[in-house]
Length: 353
Image (tube, rainbow, N blue to C red; front, side, top):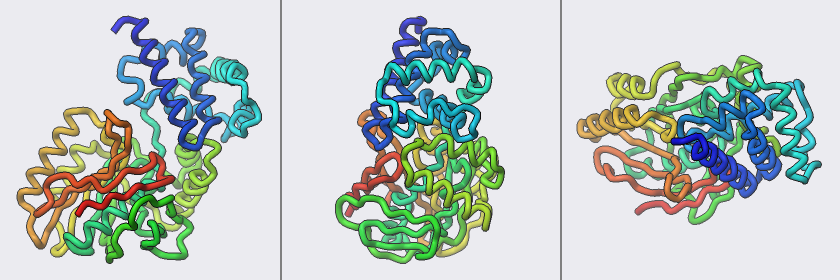
């Protein structure tokens, strides 16, 4: 791709991400993201790097990588010039553009590493869809589940057995939990069912340690600044992790899935692999490897040791976040159970028959 086409693709990604934030409850973060267009003048190292981005800028979440860095400067107190934008006190986009450019120039070296990897939002709100899928699965495979999360980041959702859920009136989890997952529910409520989580763990290539103040703050930096309920969920997750740390290993997803599938499994349980807004970040060869391993294991599953795959992932044609489930034996074909807001603000439940 020639340089002009590269810049055009980056600009399209920035525009799309800004529009997406603005229509999903974060208009001020959307302004800051749109301000990244000013960096394409090439006057900063950050600007030159994003202008020549070698991959697919939207699929790589390029605008969100830098958005995390800008928010981090405010959260750490290193530079608060963007704080009035996040508070909605500066409405003029030209002013925001100038601020984004000035802040980036002054923190060019510090912001560069934020481009090295995808954002790790680790949004607890997405667990609403996962729990709804478990409630649906319980009536088909039984109530006992061993959970395994791919791309677990800080392991927030590997603590979901300690969350309280109210899903359209169907409740689950301890009522006294500081993590309360109560999305706007569209459609019928998921079925009332028993869900027993016998164990839960996860993997990530670069796990975040919630017990480390700087790492926890980095995770918080990816949360859109003006969405107070998401900020509150990160704080609740940090509190839960302080009580009992999540079980997350540093490992390649393909290696880990194969290892977990080979591990002993309790009788009368369903081994569940789940992930949310992760699949797009995995290399094609890793995705193919996981699919092959799951198909092979599914062929061996039986009524005593069952297998399921729960996915909340982005449809790259429609950009809707779709909740699909497969299980073995009996439900090998994907069942589309619903769609959800990217951060769990709402869930639209279809509930396959």
